[in-house]
Structure formats: C-alpha cells, structure tokens
Image (cartoon, rainbow, N blue to C red; front, side):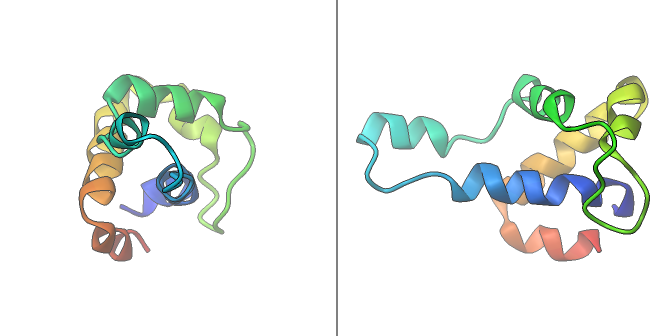
Length: 91
C-alpha cells in the first residue's frame, strides 16, 4: 500500500470537489465510483516527478509501470472511494 501513497491526495481531491449545489443527476454521476479508465487518466495526467510523500514513488513510477501496478492502483482507489477509512492503511 505504501507504493500507492502518492495517489492519496488525488483520490481526496476527486471526492472532495463534489459540490452539493450541483444538479441531482450530475451529483449522482460525480459520486459514482471511478472507472478504471478514469483512474488511469488521472494517473497519466499527474506531473511525472511530483511525489507528495517522502517514499520517493513519483507519478512517473505509476505511469511507466501501469501494466504491472495498474490494477492494484485501481483496486486501491476504488477501495478508498467506497470506504474513506481504507486510506489509513496506506501510510
């Protein structure tokens, strides 16, 4: 799980940006669990050399090794999306 720590801020950012002022159908869509395609897109769009934690796993690591770690990243993100308490196990 420590390898996935750089994604934690993105997960929270995605989830916390949902505003109550949105129309109900839009709000429902934004609250849906992210698809694997959406997770891959967010990781791809991350600045490749930014690492929010001191574990030295930059976004580039996840971008270049997507074929190896991609499914674990999706599982992690979706798990945190379902249960925010799962994030405590990442650090």
